[in-house]
Image 1 (cartoon, rainbow, N blue to C red):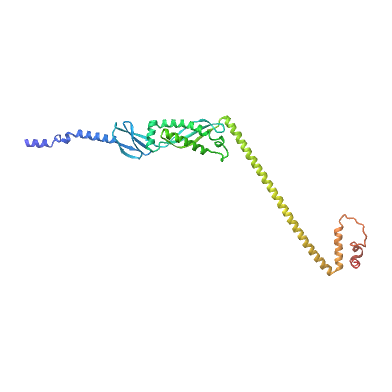
Image 2 (image 1 turned 120 degrees about the vertical axis):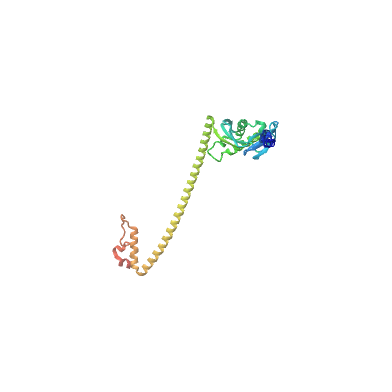
Length: 321
């Protein structure tokens, strides 16, 4: 019986050291898991993680993935958003180089660059508050708009002639000025700047309308002068061409008339050689046809040529010739 009792108690789990200390083991595993999780840092795409040791930045991680750090409160992780952000400057009353006032509103696209030094600078300057950085950028934009606008005439910003517009140059100058200030003070980069609104006060609007009317009148006068010059050139060319055509026609007519005279002389010569009397009669009739018209009244001797043929006939005219 005694041996049986010992065997029975030897198989009791309460006598196993593992079972006696399992609570402590589980607690240790949980604590180790918690410590391990506290030492792991996940860096997501589009952000950076700054490791601070007792509040002082010691490391900056920008590559996505897992990283290790010491558990709090020794080291803490601060996530910094690196994505592109936009903000608007609001309307600002600024003056142009030609002394006119305009109301301008610009948008700013900015972000914290993936550079450890600038990330630390951003963290120290605004305590990782993007809204604070946006407010400061709006303040910078107001002063920069005033400075940049002073280098451009109003005609470079508002004009119907695209050749005179310099909006890209205006936006580029504004971006360069803003980027230099923002990067130096807050560690952020200005990626793009654009004009989203440009309004003219009443006085400036009237001056702009008058300037645009004057420009259109100048263009209209130039176009009218060009049209008149073109019309004069066309008229001159037409007159020249007509003179050339008339001269050519006269030359062709003279040439045809000369040929016809030559042919007529040949015909007359053949006719005279064939029948001199008939030739004389025909020539006399031709002369009469040329001299006497429908309303012609003449008193001449009947025995004089070419009227002699009317009295003597063909035989008499031929004999007396």
